[in-house]
Length: 227
Length: 235
Image (cartoon, rainbow over all chains, first blue to last red; front, side, top):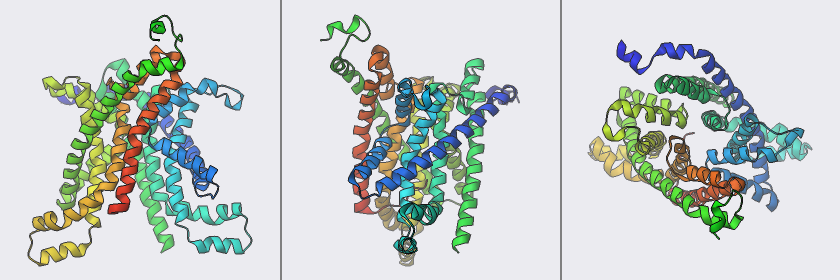
């Protein structure tokens, strides 16, 4: 049994359970807030991209292109170092808020591409029907187009959410404590990389497993609705 | 122009900073280029093998490789990088002792292989069933059918999504800066320590360099998609 303790000393991992739990909750919380932010940004960007106004769709296309062809780490650094110049809500933003903004902006670009595909999958007749019963543009979007669009692209949206959860590990480099940061704590206090990062990996796998379960459930459920 | 550089922080104008840091950042870009090129080669070979085995292998092989893919897909690349970087010394191979470059390439290749494997599998499955049935019915063995009929058609479908994978790799190389490889992000960090006032300028230059590398790849991938058609990248 010695070689197992050599490779992975579970007693050390057990000692750090409070840190890992705190980190996992932080990862889930950061991911949830970033997810809401990215879906909002993504929806707005998708609608802008499909507008007839050339200024609007060029802004949206440029945003998506810029995010897609630069690494997230650079985006996080740029946002983090511009925080002192960003006094939103009447005060300086902290690392956590900066990290969430960076994650939301990054995922928002990918989400907008997926949501756009979803909106484009809605048949013309749906929109014409909504128009003919006298709905305004916003009502059409809110009650007819977006609900169906989101339902159609739910699997890729969940896949992108899984990517977002994994990407949230990068905000540990601007000093935000989350699951990967808990691993870094164990590494620096005990110099035990396996105990630190294999445990972290199990934590991420647990979140991923729950995501897979929801994804399968959603696909079954939606498949059932559509017959 | 360069003489005032060491007198004090912030003594340089923006043009000076660009002039001084550019060769440094270009060296970083060259490292990023090298890592991404080695990785796309190793990752594609590994991913092709995994994807093929998963398609033609029995249920046991397929299930094992499925676990491999899910384990790598379910954890952040950062975690793979740290695990591999710190585990290599335990292998007791002299030239792998805490060497950052092999650790980075191995971690990135494993990560890439999961994407490539899914693309290979999807492309093979996208070839119409009638093709292989026809090949088998004229007396080809399963291997001949795969080699002469299915793969040539599937390979064409694999080309466009590989562009997306290449961009994922390029962006992934930014993360290996944390184990001390002087690629573009690391070079940018060093430059910002020398010129703290021009931090946004330097990170902006870094971002532009990534853009200059990634954007053509994305454009070529889109062109290839209109030419060859594509399979959907599993997300």
